Length: 33
Image (cartoon, rainbow, N blue to C red; front, side, top):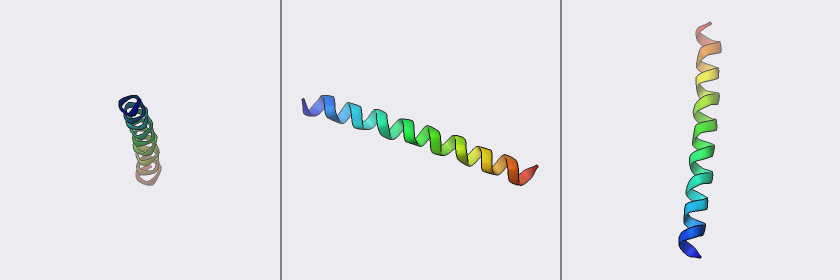
C-alpha cells in the first residue's frame, strides 16, 4: 500500500512539474515575443 501511494504521489508531482514547465515556457515565450 505504501509503495502504491508513493507511486501515486510521484505521478502527481511529475504532472505538476510538467504543468509548471509548460507555464514557465509560456511566460518566457510571451516575454520574448
